[in-house]
Length: 388
Ligand code: N2P
Image (cartoon, rainbow, N blue to C red; front, side, top):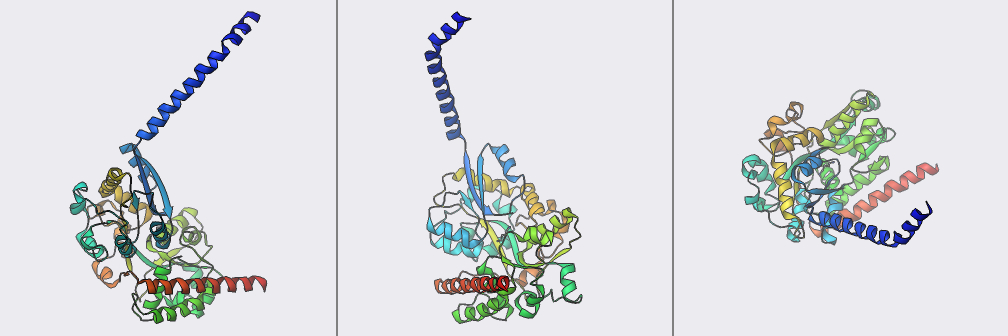
């Protein structure tokens, strides 16, 4: 025993050295493997991907995906305009894309690397998108969105003697209606770039107005109803409509449908509906684009080709409840989605929806200031409610 201990003591200096070298070699091998591992950095909207889409892509290609999310065009735009993006694919809405293309943030898409692009993508959708991206040079269409009203059928009926004005934006924009809903909870999207055009359109003005005075006018309208708004946030409404924490929300089509789905899973009896009010709304396209600074361009194309696969994109639509522009995929999309005119709009509905155009810097400034006022009015009103 004693002699064994002595041998270990004599040799332990060397044992230590050998084991340190072993760790070093293993670490170097690991580092090399990491360096060889293909990577892809994606920045997309929250709640906007299938639950297994990314992991299946990783398994299929061996590419490691870093997938981050944002909640508004404003957030993505600020990121893109203030630093060289670290992502290989980002997903702006097409009206925001215009300014970003001008700022030379994106590289043109090489369509020869996207063999199914022309065959699979709906030419009508591409044409609409070409209004923002002439020649569809930079953008790869991902999903089609409308902005409407999501509401809790029973809670709203209760407050309007079973005759709620859900077919009109008046439900949201008129103080006499909003005041009735304040207690059961109104949520707004945190998207001034959408709320101002909706309010302009509601009062009969051009939703793409270039007149700052008109924005001041609708700012008053939004200001008047803002004290009744429970919160301004673009992501919580999925859970909160489902659980009954809010009873009405300005929301994106698929998100409201996701809320319906959640409510069904909760078995809490909450019935939710989505409506495009009679005054209309706008259609927007969320697209993928590759920044100039992307380091993993081949991998970005592999992902776009993966999205062109009809079954892959259909699975995403089936999960997030948004319409995709892949015409070959429609056969794989659940028929309750494709037959729902709020999700897959037939031509006559599509023709009635307007699109948003980019704003001049002057209008952008006006919106920014007016929005800050609206947020303040709302916070002050909430504060004084808490005090009283
Ligand atoms: C998904 C958000 C839809 C994007 N949660 C609206 N442009």
